Length: 556
Ligand code: ATP
Ligand code: MG
Picture 1: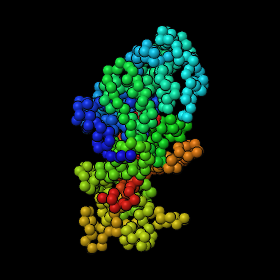
Picture 2: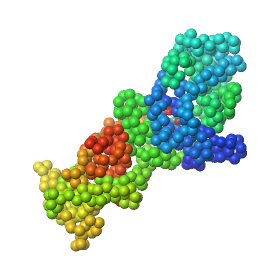
Picture 3: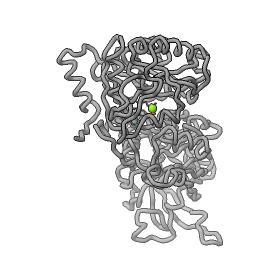
Picture 4: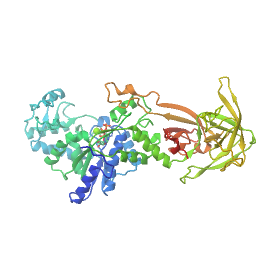
């Protein structure tokens, strides 16, 4: 059965509610357990919103625990980035940052406990032999020839593994469960393997590392996690999770619950594939604004609220689903429409000279940043020469173009005067290069006294005062709705046109804004001052998302 419900009202929240009501638990404790082997992506945002959101809703705690059992792929850079991402999303973990590696000594002791109970053994099969012995989905496995080693012998061998006496791959510690189980995960799974590598947290203290399966549930037990919420691919691991909890002297009995992972079309959500995009320099880094990483979305201009709202919209269900990326785009557009200040940038400038304004005229117009919200105001310089967008002037009036500026017709400059076009100049290619106009007096905030209303409202900047800004225009990174679900390599579907850099003229107030400030550039789209590259001397803005097709909804 598929059940989709908003965070706060999903099937896991219902289970938690029942467990609190029945007295099964007195306090909810969840955890978010990333492996620090890459940056977090939008799928992780869903898991963060769920785990931290449940804790918030039920007055419980949510821990951050790095699941750091594969040191070769992990790094401090990733740890720092993950912490930043969670905080940026608006969540805070309870207690210290935790690491599964904090529990290595305890996990080791539990491995010895299993050995002593005759439930674990050191196996010398090579990886290839072990695969053969393991059987297949339709065929039972065979017992390893090392399966009947005595607890004493296993203890001694495991101690030697830990002491570094064996080479990598020479042997592993395995649980002794059931080689004929229909669940492959129960066919004597590996508990420890030899890896003679430095660990970002424990240094060179260990040369054996526990597997994910042997680590996760017991770490949950140590932390008294009540509801261990994970994605569906762990469903098959649950019997193993429960086997360890049942066979070890753990301090608590956590339970695992699975939900469907988020898949987005036109996107890949796998750290391995995102890493390939970074390593192959398809993008500029993990936080490239085209990446579906949290850091990428941040740099693109998504707000934390918009990402949380998206996670709420898609809900939590018991099955994996494919979500239309348009939903994510909608979430951010909607959020910026409601909250972002509005200002003016001219992308394709066409100069207009207003002949009845004196050459030395300079007037500062006070312009609100939003027509409904109280977001403050800035001063906009108005002078004789301005830029408008070249699409806002046409030589001839036509039905298609009835709202715009043509000779003899009027438009209103947003926050400014009404002007009327009087003549224009063209270059040899027939392109309009200059428009001459006259200002209609007494039209600041009111219609012309002669009753001839302007045909529309356009954005503009003063030529002498506007600043040049670099605009980075981003679009989707992939051309295929399911780039990693075809027979081809997903890299084939990278959109080579996903970034265009242009220069635009922006009003002076925009140059002075802080990095990461979001704006609607009126009639153009939503932009953000680049987190790293924007400065007053060299303004840089990233296109977050275009305006809605129905412009009436975004034009104030
Ligand atoms: P990836 O498959 O991208 O490498 P992962 O599952 O290996 O991701 P982890 O760092 O192990 O990444 O994940 C931390 C938590 O985030 C886990 O509980 C995992 O279930 C959850 N998670 C990962 N990807 C998604 C997703 N697409 N949707 C929802 N939750 C996810
Ligand atoms: Mg994982």
